[in-house]
Amino acid sequence: MLPSLLLPLSRPLRLCAAAWLGLALAALPAGSPLAQQGYPGKPIRLVVPFLAGGGPDMTARTVAQKMAEHNGWSVLVDNRPGASGNLGVDSVAKSAPDGHTLVLGQTSNLAINPALYPELPYDPLKDLVPVALVSSSPMVLVTHPKSAFKTYADVVAAARMQPDTITLGFSGSTAHLAGNLAENAAGIQLRHIPYKGAAQGMTDLVGGQIDLYLSSVTTLLGQVRNGKLRAIVLTSARRSGQLPDTPTLAESGYPGFDAVTWYGILAPAGTPAAIVQQLNRAINQALAQPDVAEKLRSEGGEVLGGSAERFAELLRTEVTRWGKIVKDSGASMN
Image: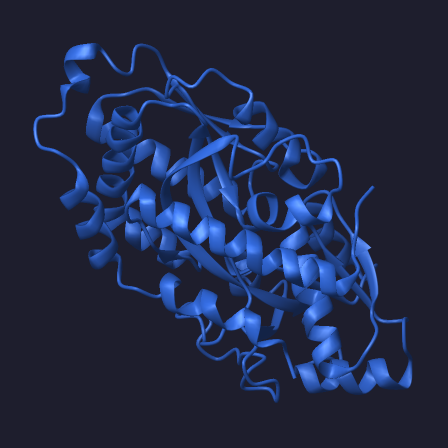
């Protein structure tokens, strides 16, 4: 049975987008003086701490483009991968707190890595200020379309016959821990193959070098749709609208299983509250546009949005929640 501490994430992430946006816009004073202060005074740089072409990159570029169109700003996406996202996040944490440098953080580098890396160079609760949640996505376990694995029960049966031989690829600590939790729930042991990015992992899976790969629906959906990968099971509590025929682990005999990855935009600590509010409004306005919402949903995401305060509350909750999961697992990165 999966630990019950995975359950609290599902409720806040499933509030409707309209409710989130209403909270955010209602909290913003009318007639903000920021325009008179000349913000932004230069291009805004949105750091994505992962390689170009993956789910986080697509999410960032979709929102950045609409922010630029709607406000007449210049918003540039800057991919800075490395160390499971830590390098990019740290670069923003150490940037000037003037609202011109932001980061698209996610579950792994904000809530998991603080417990996973003993010498993490930043503290997400002290060195960053949440601006707005963007979206969430379940993870999906995939395999080669010619693989004998058609269900998670097939994987479990094979793993019990041959422990530590079936290979599971992943990139990022969220997929790593979600994979561990799924194994523990089923009482099996897979051989983990970490990758720096999803692109190489999917290449090896299609080429037959590994048996399984676990990542977000946002990252893998295109390859599933074109038939290069077969979706086996989802890690979320409910099915994805983009993969309606793919069951969840909860449906597959592991009730209560719910592990998703969420994305949010943050600024360096010390960024003026008025600038955070203006950025929050711009992000929420972007997410409220039908084409943006449709784009994120079509790629397997669920639009979130909401106030900066709500994101801060979620971040505190998630740091505690995933910190316990890391501690219980005994995992550590040196």
